[in-house]
Image (tube, rainbow, N blue to C red; front, side, top):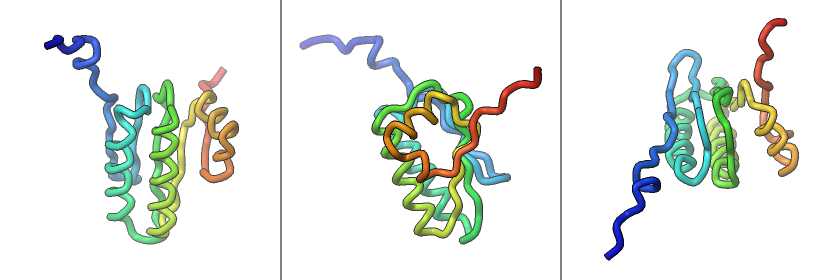
Length: 120
């Protein structure tokens, strides 16, 4: 029997922080297969609690990487938002994530704002 690889078994998904006012999810780190399911579930639950016409924001300022499972989760959250009549906004989206949304043809599917640049 082989021992589990400690580098793999000790890896924890990045924190997902929920804020109530405004309804917002704050993501950080890598949004990949390890965290995409939890992100999708948490965001969908928030969307389902909101009234039609509400705005739900996903703050992505601290996201360092997103893969296809993360993109799939965003698409699922967007679909749940549409069904619920909730506006989904991706805020403080890093340049690398914006570029990935453009390359995959998803950029126009989301209301996005890029990361705010610090004052010079």
